[in-house]
Amino acid sequence: MTEPLTEKLQHLRTEAKHALDKAADQDSLEPWRVKYLGRKGQLARLIKDISQLDAPARKSAGQLANTIKQELTQAFTARAAVFRDHHSAPATALSGASLPPASSVGHLHPITLSIRRIQHIFARMGFIVAEGPLVEDPAYNFDLLNIPLHHPARAETDTFHTASGSVLRTHTSPVQLRAVLAMNLTPPFSVISPGRVFRSESTDASHEHTFHQLEAFMVGERVTVADFKGVVKKYFSDFFEQNVTTRLRPSYFPFVEPGFEVDMSCIICQQAGCSVCGRTGWLEMMGAGMVHPNVLKNMNIDHTRWQGFAFGGGIDRLAMLRHHIDDVRLFMSGRLDFLNQFS
Ligand code: PHE
Image (cartoon, rainbow, N blue to C red):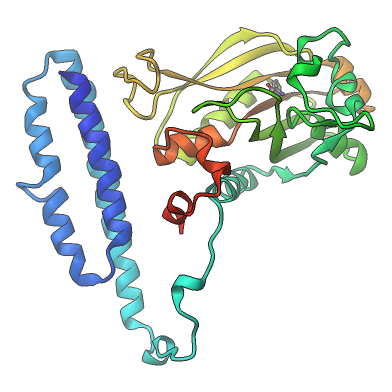
């Protein structure tokens, strides 16, 4: 019983936002409000059904309904403001007889939009942005990151190799070294590096050979896991526009010590349990840890004085969660019916 109802709520959220985005003028706003937020509207009807759930399910569904109500009300107010501003603009601004038809104007790819959103979030926290090459020297992709020769990630089968001995980078972690060495950075510093990465594996709805990661790292005299937790919470909460919690699980990556996997509370069901989080309430989001002393040494940083965290996680997954996209392959498909939804 809970599940269909939380799913219905999620559906309503997506549909209502979509319909609001499509609203062409001020006059279409009131029917929208009545349909979704009105006293006898769709949300009100679902809220009525909540009372029939058992207590724990009632609580989480109730919270979800409240969040959705707030979101939709805010979105409505924002949209109304846009139309108001337009209205009061001088008439000449609208008389663009010679302007090309709007349909010929292109728009940004959803992944680019997500990257920009992420950059804004991190810029506010004082991070700078660095980019690295997509065709990488194995020394940067592996060796200088403390990844030994026998590590499974180096297997021929997992990595694309070029005839001349380079690799298509398998993660954004080499940019840690590149940024520090190329820009001559000295601690303290905070850097993010978004970009494309490649893995030679078979594709399915949640795996793609070409995808995108966000790397972030911060080094200073007293940078700890607590700083990491604060930054990640801010990152996800701002990206998804809701308050999330995170949890760390011990894990191993050769370039950090200690290392962990980071989970985020499920933003789809608010931890009530749904198909997206496999009914666990948690979503696996990224790998992270404290930068390994060997990696600091390879950046010419004195590891007895400086320390810091690093994390790397998928951007495609973030965009999928945010926009309720269920197949990662759509991003690279070039399908305009998919892409034009983001115009
Ligand atoms: N580079 C790792 C990966 O691609 C993620 C990671 C980045 C883990 C930084 C720890 C620290 O899986």
